[in-house]
Image 1: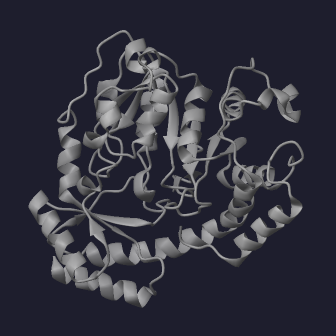
Image 2: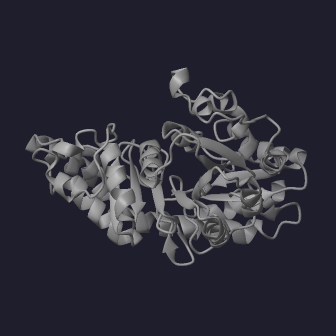
Length: 389
């Protein structure tokens, strides 16, 4: 979260005063509905659905495209564990693929991992950066696969003029505490497909059959769950959405300055980017020849209080080797519901199954772009980093 204040507090206060905190049964046409309409307009999609979390959005998108028992879904080996967990929640099997030096899903390895059981690919736009969507969409079309964009860490970003989350068959956003716009915990599904939207809507609300919009749904009703958002979340997000473009502009200015200065160093190179203009601007990544050099740089930057630097390999929860429920194939609380058991075939995972990912993550150093610093302060900090290299 970069910016929140009086406007959000006033919006929440009005919801509380109205005593209508639920988005349905009196809340129709309220903050949640208006936020969805405004988000759809900003991202250029036909449908959006506000959910209680980014994970919930991913799960609903999986259900939306029809993921079920035995279906394989290719996900990157570097992402938050929610990405493969969402596959498992829908009954599918996550298949791990390598990332390349951009830290994004490697299209070449994706194609190697496709089998007769593959149904979808999940590009994850990590850390505000963009995946190579041209290559991934080409692969998806070739093999007749669905694409779900996990844009949970890249809300507002774009690729070749199209907003992230709007390029694949479905997209997912997160609005939790650590995202560029936030209500503490929340998410959204994006899609242009009527069936994917209707199925996502049903899954996100087990009471959907009783809602006023039930008669407009054109797919058979099935038992859904509860990933609904409240009017409190809708009110906060309506204000946050208005802040998005200003937040991105400020981040991009500072990121561009950092990259201009850091890019002149002979001790490392900027990590390659699939899209400079549409990058959210929230992070800068540097690639070293060895893991030892990367670690040494990170230590010097942190010791000198020039900012907070970190190697992706040290972030633990984003690295596949730490995904215990996945690697040990505990896909459910109950063995009879475990997707790995339902698949009725052997699925192999190991700690060394994506060696290129581990190598790249070890040799990369990342820094958050300092949103609150002036351009003069950012310039001074970046110059000092180059001197410390």
